[in-house]
Image (cartoon, rainbow, N blue to C red):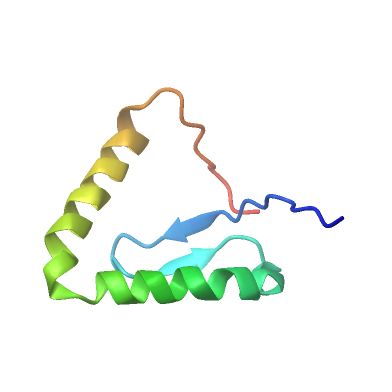
Length: 79
């Protein structure tokens, strides 16, 4: 019987470059097979001008949640 293990990969977002993300974990490449479908979905949805407004609203929502939700635990240092 196979089992799944959940992994959390922290990201750093450069506010000066809105489409650039960097994994904080140096060994992120070991998860490449799981990340490729996510990356493809992101590319297909964010490079489409018809989804730009929805994407911008989503980014604003995530930013507000990160700033004002006291239940979130920010990661202050890169690992």
